[in-house]
Image (tube, one colour):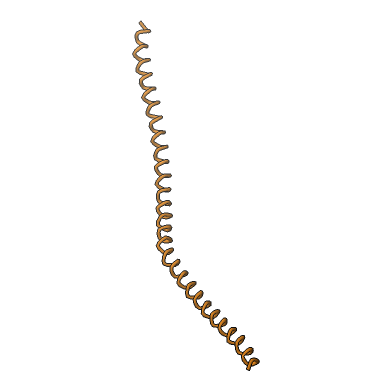
Length: 103
């Protein structure tokens, strides 16, 4: 009987360990599944927000370039206008001074 018992106990022990391993594998599989599902659920809104922010960034970049170009044009026009006003005022002063020199 001792021989039979010594053969059965290790088999039962090994069988119990195998069952625990199977249960643990199943549990790990379920946990992995739910983890992946939760990650997907949480990342979808973030990916949508990233796409929206990238789109806004492109739009704002285009508006910035456009406003910089407009600013350059306005500065050029302002410079030309100041030069024209300065030239015309110099001419007016010169023409007012010139008749008095002729006398």
